[in-house]
Image (cartoon, rainbow, N blue to C red; front, side, top):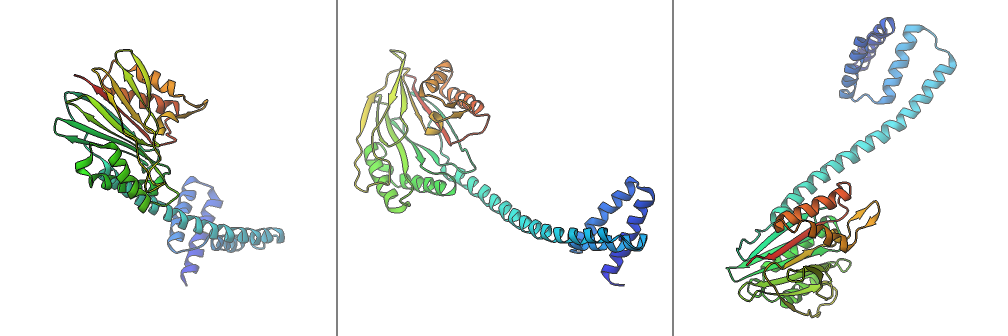
Length: 336
């Protein structure tokens, strides 16, 4: 007796046992037997054929309309089986791709993460969260001893793996300019040439770059189409727009960037961000920039790190804990 004959014989035993007693134990044995048939690569339509054969042997002649219904069911299951196998193949491919993206996302975090400067003169708070597995946001600090700190915030116009690759390229391009990190306009002009030469013409990068001179307590900065931040003046207790106008990186090779500067007093705060903060979407639409300021103000009795953490938590909750865009928020506060 061949393998199929043995399967038919055992199937007949299980079906007879169930029809005679209709017990849960008989159903359980049938479930276990189905695994055996899967191991033997028995297709769904073959299972129906076996069931029909056993049913006929147990009950004799089967009415014609019931026979015809089995023919119909076999055709349905043949189509179902092929579609199910295709679905399984696609699912396996998707799982493999997701696994690779997980590895890539972990590598991106390792490559792009940097230390936050530690200084008595300046308190710093940072939070950066990806909406998906890989982020199109990037921030970067450079500390030059105790004299200065440089900071960059960038955002790729796009998401996913291409955006993450662009951020990695920007990171290494910035690392190649160690001696000019205190000149924001120079940094942006060099990065612009790198992006224009190496990034697809459909992708652009916005960036804000600033250099804080702690001896002079002055902040020098330039922007490339990046989301405006905020400046808090402790003396007037007012927030103002912190804008640095300039063309996004990668549009024109010869773009020049204007450098601005600002005197920073004790208690003043520089708030830098990506558009994932100001374009937070709720059930009522986008929140306003004034609402972001109100959130920051409500936590100003805390440290900069506690402020950014709390603002993120509040905005995440407003979005029902599902970020629609990458989120980066940085606060620099002069302490002495």
